[in-house]
Image (cartoon, rainbow, N blue to C red; front, side):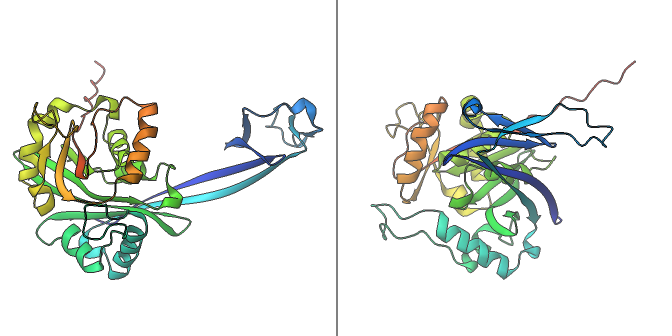
Length: 313
């Protein structure tokens, strides 16, 4: 049974305003770095001199345009992992609220088109933290507020330990900050052999590829084709076990447009995922194909073991 694990990260968020225009800034180890600033020659300049009593500080003066207003905010991110017996109803209540407000809405082919997809505390515990499986709950808080969470399940298939992400949600106000990647990296254990996820959102697939030792452009489609069926059929989670494999890597005559995916008959709206997919395709060579209603993308990734270092002779 997993113990309660905590990792804490403190970030400095900086914002600069230049005549109502945003400039990107970085604050690292006491050094300011202005990225792509406007021409400072047009503005008055304020010079910050080092403290002459500081015998260590010998850096040259730092100059800034006086019209540049700089604001620094310290952001505290805490990642925590819990075993099922450590997850309280209050924690699940917050997790349900996060899901209900951020996951998505039902699609046009569903029984409640346009309505939010929701989960209750009871269903969260029964479906994602079942007594019959080894599962964990991982959450990230930002300045004390729940910003994202994940549920995972582990089981054995042949001689491999499978770690499957059964849910991954990040609040809309906290997206594109690396929290999904941070959550997935927090759940990893040395004993894991294979990671898996089914998701309709390209962002979740990107985060999984990055977190589990590859990139979305280099996912091992041959490995997915060869291992997905056995891995999923051995799952103690019903909707994973019952999902039907779809895509051209499983059936050359597949007409869905998918390359690697599953038919879950889960008719959530794909409006937001498809918009995200357009952005992803501008930046990456997307390998998983098209996405139709009722289908999700599938990733099954083998853990890349580091070779042990040879001791010096």
